[in-house]
Image 1: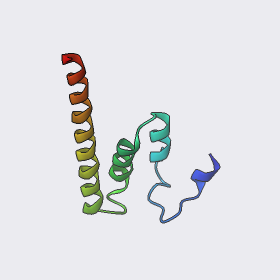
Image 2: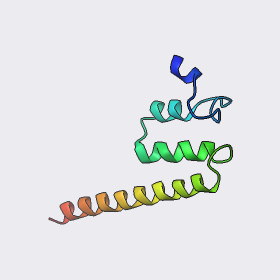
Image 3: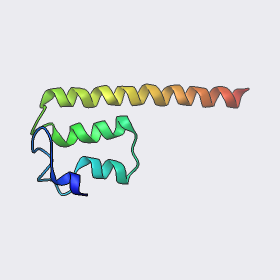
Length: 79
């Protein structure tokens, strides 16, 4: 992919074997999962603790979404 040879806003992904976007797309991950991968990959080179806090935030969103989805499923099976 030609666009991966160019990075806007730094060079924190250029030296990786696989860029986060390649992994995210290949595994058809959703937005939250993809964001977790992105921030976990770059936190040492770019965002530091702030990126780790973003990972926690996206994990919290995923947990809430999954609990809500499970509750919907549970309610349907009870009906």
